[in-house]
Length: 474
Image (cartoon, rainbow, N blue to C red; front, top):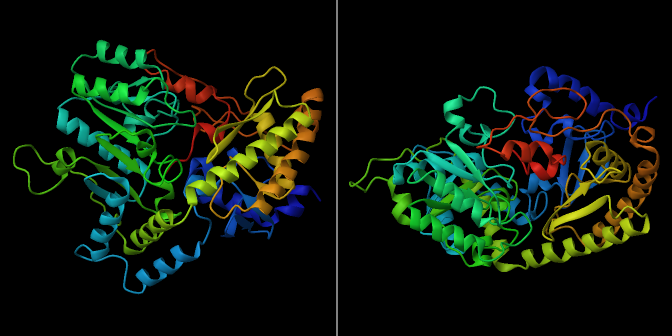
């Protein structure tokens, strides 16, 4: 019997069934079958802390952590207890629940914004921010950062990627792009589209800090030109700082969006901002048209808000952020030493901020490679570690970090051999593929379609590292 049949028998059967019932076999592209090697767990049965067990009973130390949504650890006790308590009283009513105000107070106290609206996923929050900015400014164009890989499942963003099928060309033209830490590219946008940009949206950081006051310069230009500044803190929020990267970098955006770790895996996200803009989605103002802003049946389910409150209280009362940085630093140093020892430090690199690490897999020519990424994933999975990224949680203790470094050391020994003789000798089956590709061509390549206005498509398609280009479709 093959290794796949022996180790992943139930997963293989579920994958076959899943393909028949679910487009792509998964409800999140970043979790899809094409993102992992053949020798990988197809379905997870349960998780506890930093460990998960697949449907075949195999145990792994996990570093994807629900695509960065599980900051404290799987089934974190205080969060689970809060959810259980809330569920005993019902989860959804005809009128608002008291916990909606309680959660809003907790969130705004922590983040420092003036108003907040909760919803279920990051895409709705960022798209709500874009709609609000367009309504307030009366402008149609939106600019997003071409170096930041994912903002929304909605047309205004997906139209900039190679997967733009079904999105009218007229909609695609309404989003333009700029580069991170490149203030000249921002100035150029305002020069080329005078009086037409409603907002600029970007992540405060993808790992590197802003240089030469980049964020503040962007804010200055936005104010000068009449556009809003939107900071997408889906990833940086609850990792860079408990109050978000905006607190760390000392900047107050017009609007900001949070999600991911806000509910430790439970479905809750937030659009927050200044009252001047957020009020347009309310009932009291009479000076401007109303904005249909984030109205969802399940947007304020009690158990999700209870999870958010318990999660935020943990970040307020315990040294979660410090732990994430400390454990991430240990991982970075241990893996870097292993890479040097095997002579692959020029081909395998740990990248990002210590609290939110990823890695780059390069071929013998120093080019990003899906085949080498697949091989690395395969070999770490064989050694009991599931690591599409290197994202630590509050429950990644020293023992887990040490075992991970040992697993990576073994995987890099194979990686070194593959650099000499190719991946085909070691990789079982096909390589993984990039998420943003126009066609399913089956060999890990992506057909890239770009326009001069939207270089983001080329940036996403050529990065060659699936997990680092797509933090997750929320």
